Amino acid sequence: MTQLPKKLLSVLATRKKEDTFRTLNSIEGLIDFLSNDYLGFATNETLFSKTFQLLLTESVASNGSGGSRLLSGNHKLYIKLESLLASFYKSEAALVFNSGYDANMGLFSALPQRGDLVFYDEFVHASIREGIRMSHAKAYSFSHNSLSSLKERVALNIARNEYEDSAVYVVTESVFSMDGDTPDLKAFVKFTKANGYNFIVDEAHAVGILGKNGEGLIPQLGLEKDVFARTVTFGKAFGGHGASVLGAENLKDYLVNFAKPFIYTTALTPHTLATIITAHEYMGELGEDPKELLKGNIEFFKEQLGMHKIEQFFIPSDTAIQGCIVSGSKKAKLVSKKLIDKGFNIKAILAPTVPEGQERLRICLHSFNSKEEIGLLVKLLAGFI
Image 1 (cartoon, rainbow, N blue to C red):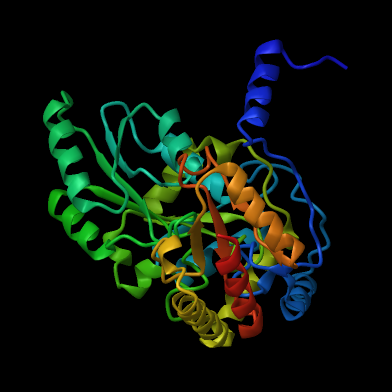
Image 2 (image 1 turned 90 degrees about the vertical axis):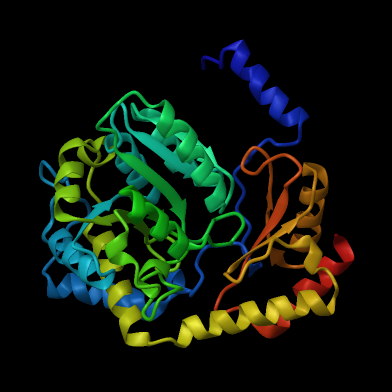
């Protein structure tokens, strides 16, 4: 078997030397404080049964889609799903992608054009940054959650821009995946609307949790008509797979014609589509019960941090994502191992995923975590960090 070129072997060796080398591990039987399955939908037997029943009702017996959506893969369940999503998320239209990564890559690589300007929060997901990089627009980051930093970057770079018909895009997330914090979305909307800028928000870690029926933070704040585009994903609180871009009907038309991750990929399987449909319908049936359980666990977790006097190690967050800063890869990995040895599934997040010196334990709380589990976890943390 042909080996990697020497320069790539050297890169791997450097990763190992710096203790940032990634490996694939499968650890089962531990208490889940790791997954993004915030409401337990990924293992929900009722959802499993409802998905099977939907396939029977729709007379679907296909294992795969057979091609891209522009060829043979535009299954009838896509039509049903995208109509449901537009209604559920209070959007004019919805376009389903195979993953959140694909959705952001498709949106940001196709949308901004040469001469356009993109301003993005420095902590946005890698899929957003990669998509922007593939576009022909000029892009500038602003300090995390800082509207004043955004205004400074906009003022400086719009003055330098030689194009007269430039579109301006401002990009952030409603809940950040590593910090679990949120920007002042109302303030961002006020600024972007006043200047005619296009505001785009990734709601991956908000949907399913925030909003009356899990519609996300944007609808909860009543801002859905003031946002140019949203991305939502189904592999987290909805327990499935896939994602969607929400926006105007003409945005959907544009992406169908120009978003390469949509055009050139095999469509999702009918079973995956059925899972997404049933998860959204099930969310509407549940009311606020699982979200309330999760909310209670978040509040209890934060109370425990205060009781054990370790809140100073945590990034302020009122969401399911709680980041415990443990500087240095070796120490972060050591604390993670100690917790795993005690039966808690929590992994260390290392550079370059997060900045050096900001290595952390990313603790995900769930509706199904018990108070006893949470209390013991915090007690152990207090002795390890």
